[in-house]
Length: 625
Image 1 (cartoon, rainbow, N blue to C red):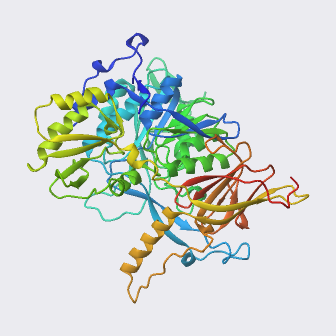
Image 2 (cartoon, rainbow, N blue to C red):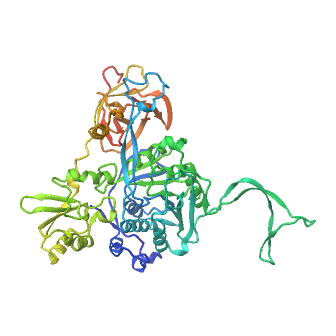
């Protein structure tokens, strides 16, 4: 449950408009309910510190949704000076990462430096998130996010919203309403070259970046870019009488020329390519929808000074935070996906940044992202199945011996506006959901993550006379609790006499979830195999060490829930080589991790991104402890 609700805007006495002063210039299905969510405020949840890297002075990583993160910032009185967001584009696409099974430690690649051939690398896809929205829900979601972001922006702040043709023009109208038409600065066209597939019209090779400010006091620096083909240019001077620039001449009346090597940057950016699959930054990060560092460097240099806080509330690969750190700006990286948080954490740690990692405890951070949690719900709610007789408003049905078919409503965890069961949402269920059901339905089940006012909602249901269908309210959190189990690991610690390092040996590692993914991949592969195209399944060794992606040691605390302080960490690349401090070595991982101090806890991340923590026993008897 939310601790309380934080208003989107300060009180009117602080000089800003209140919600009732806003006019809805863009009307669409669902927009009339949005004002109820805005008046209620941003849900403030408990925010738990998970890890401190270095001294923590350079920035913050938050795993959670944009609106909840903004509520936390508002509660702390923190303001951001520059926002760049690259939210879903409402494109209908699913985004996945390639999950590689590391080569078997005990059996493959005994000689350091030997390359792995492509047919030796086994991989399967893991869905990161689904960009599947209808237009109305997307606009409601974006309106709430943008309103929340505005509430924590400083007076000198600017915001850059990165979109494309799918929805960008609608969002432009929303931003005119939220930030004010007078605060629109630019519609930046980022043009890039890419493979041109089939098209019934002109090929689309650009994105749009909407640039707004909080007011005239915005921080902005004009930038210049090199001219590719250097050319002669006539010099110009200001003619006060004519009130315009005129060509400059010397004392003899001859035109003055100079070599033009650069020019003022305009709003069409054609000199920044997409991240090349072979480029170093792509190979090191390898994140779907990854944006180039050059793009963020331009935005950050244009709209911030050193020391100003740069925020990205859909942080993805961590490019905004990484570039902000390199340019001497503190950073804030927010994302709901575990893979994003881990990617940004590893990227920033490799850049020697010091930062804190937090998690918003909103009750749904149970899987790697909301999409996977939604995918699991049908398995976790007993008896839930699809039913053609109920429309898409309902997740499915369960069969009850007494009541027969019982339709089930489940909040969409991708849409923050449905997580909290309010009287407005209950009214939509009564007016839109129930009338669409067959006349034989006697009962429905409504699951919720959070509830605004249980007493008021139950009274609202009792007082409603529009239906005789019984409504059963069910908390979804107990259904999900306990479903995320830790991976199983057998480890031991050694510290021989005279040794300077403690060594943690991972003897065995088993992840049920990874094995389930691999089993599903193999079953699909065998089903599609032919004599001409036989299938080679992914096989896991008895030790299972090839399903480990990263390890970390904490030498400060043995409490399982304590804040993590990494004394030593390493990652294993897809070929089995060790990456330390962001630098790839020619050392094949041998199943161990070392530290100079006695390790108290071990954290293991499997190849799908799940992390488990293990409290370590004292070193074995041959140590000098």
